[in-house]
Image 1: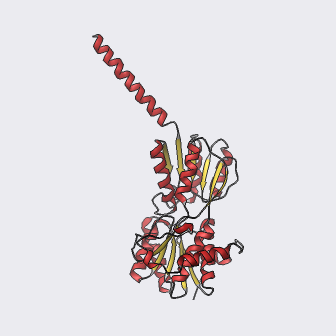
Image 2: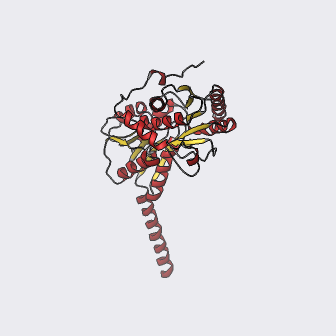
Image 3: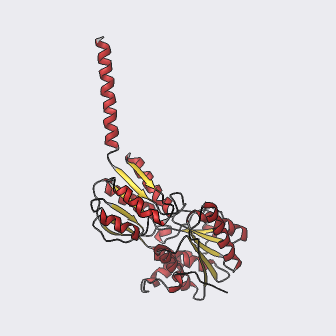
Length: 334
């Protein structure tokens, strides 16, 4: 009987030890609110997701996420997570959605990805949208044989318009007479409708003489790339290496170092080193010039690509950083 009691006591102690270990491991909690394109958009949101899942798995930190279906749900999800008093919340959205929540929850720490917001509880990771756009704009203009390049964005928000502005600047510095065809997917009822819309816009641009499209449109990049393959044309992806999607038809991918920036900021917060303020995130990609090169696309790029992008960056240093009027709304070209 004594042996049985000792065995039971040992099992209880082991169980308690395991329970305590679980509590310790779950002490830190992270929340993430993705943009409306969803965490599997093969672009910006997925780059955030890669960083969060890798670090939380390594640190054995619990995290939960929300994927809003539209912009109206963004602020609500941010408030829902803020109510839980998490160690840090990552917001992959426009600063306008985060600001009222961060002001209402001053004790909650936030990491804003891809925006600028000056609050005592926000660490804002500002991506260099202008230079990233300019790099791939220069590449598109250098590659184009028709003198007409395209842009398909998910929606006309602030970040998208800054990328488009850089895209236009970079292209015009390479080819002053370059023409643009600009479209936005807008809100779609479901994934099927979004895919149909993407196919329609891509086909329409190629029909109008476009031969390179910057596809800044989340998961619909696959549809745009498929249309480019059908038309023997090219697209440019964004934020992750998308060169593999339609090999031979993805010219390059715009890179803004999203994953490394998120991972660094999150690691600091989990280590108790959270610091509010603005962080200027440098470009990634080939030599830090904002575009990606690998064995898949190296042969597609013009020989002078790197030199041209470097020259464009030098000229942009003295140019005003403004959003031109034609970046705000789609252009109607005859």
